Amino acid sequence: MFKPGIPQVKRPIPERQNCFDQVGSLAVALTRWSSAGFATVDESVYTSRKSSCAACVDPESGASNFDPKGFGGIGKCMICGCMGFKLILLTEKCPLAKW
Ligand code: SF4
Image 1 (cartoon, rainbow, N blue to C red):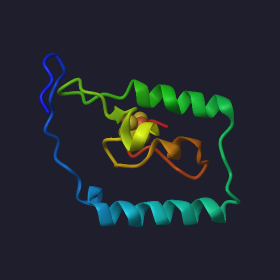
Image 2 (image 1 turned 45 degrees about the vertical axis):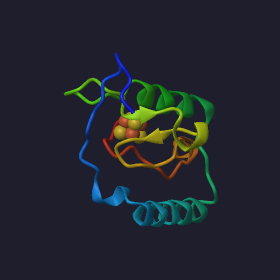
Image 3 (image 1 turned 60 degrees about the horizontal axis):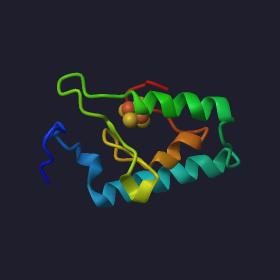
Image 4 (image 1 turned 90 degrees about the horizontal axis):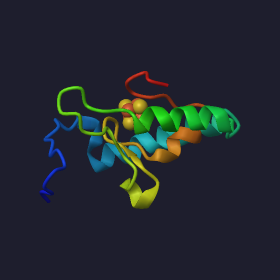
């Protein structure tokens, strides 16, 4: 829905963002996480990751690459389609290598 004043961006949706692939990516991430003993980052790393996501914008449009309301408020990376939950998982990485 168009909202005046908010940049509306048509991003090319990576193939991996379809629902089935997202479920597959989630399964892979959770398997990797369980293999690492369900290790999570400490608070300072989480805060740093969160700040990176909050400041992550598309260089052409200036639109945010992170939707804090995505997945019911968990947050969503608009680049990889992952849940903000990934920020606490030690085994996850930013798809743009920002963290
Ligand atoms: S690309 Fe990286 S820094 Fe940007 S929103 Fe996604 S996970 Fe966060």
